[in-house]
Image 1 (cartoon, rainbow, N blue to C red):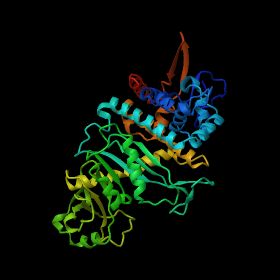
Image 2 (cartoon, one colour):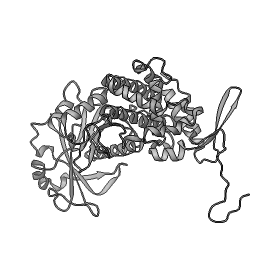
Image 3 (cartoon, rainbow, N blue to C red):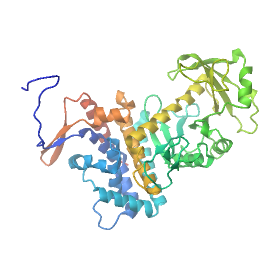
Image 4 (cartoon, one colour):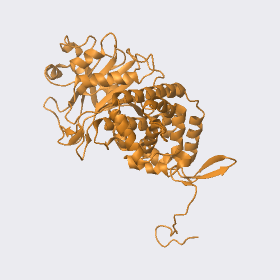
Length: 464
């Protein structure tokens, strides 16, 4: 027994351990790669970019990078943590090999390479959603309860000269990507669809960029889910433009939408005219009435002839929280916000709170930045575009794992940092017997049983 001379035990330490896996929990991600078919799908579509007699498959290299970022890596060199555990993660390419692959994919028909990668992602997504059953985002989706695609932009700083890095509106320097995510609702997290990498000086409300992201997002959805009111596009006020809403509501697409709407001009003028009986109590995200917040429909008080038919404008007023600063358009000591939507069903409070849940998209972006999105490691713009796609694979790999393996547990909503701390970093010991390798997870880990359940559920799935 070791003597405790202070707050912590006195333990002898050496580096002679054998067969020990420090990130044994990452095996749940490798099982998802196999079950989703993403690894084999990428290997197939990227075969034209594979050099003759190459040892490592380009698809395997990209999924290895995705695994590295899902388990906590930020840079290409962080893949070393997987390289030291071949029994779990297989053979890992060297850093120079990975760099050479990025150079090839970024210079030899790079647009075609990204199309191939996105095709493999879409096929895997459709397969996972089908296997997820009731846990799939498509379950119960309808015109009244649409599948939600969130759009939002974010700034990614660059600390060195990179292609197309530009000064940003926040006085920084870097990039201004526009992203889209599928919202899994209150019961889950979300998964990425598109990341459009843009220079740092790209506009916030550029119509062409919003349209392009929606076009690419729809391609990531299963067939039968690429038009109609059962799909809702949700954005902040950057998407509240005539050009974007006209495109969304074109009869060939006819999407539902919920976008932020600016409070100025005619909207600001009618706010004092809304009768007291026109205000109704707002809801919290759980459907309970929210103290000090109200909503009203002011559509009939506005001239909306230049906007798409069927557009409604809903205003929310609330007592500002301590420290909040009011705008010049705020009146009576309340803070006002507005949304525009073409949703026909549901109470005003339901429609308004559904839009307000768009804030989860900001959480998705923050989580992506915790998984490699905050660091664009290459000088080449096209290479950094490819890096963004690897980040998306890492984050959707975690989302699929939660959807299938942990749907009925608390881990369904855990963010990447907590997934790593509670699951992926569970250690284990390898044992070989009769040509069979077994990973014995640390029984002392609080969530070892939860992890084991997830692994078994995912391993039971058949790949596409």
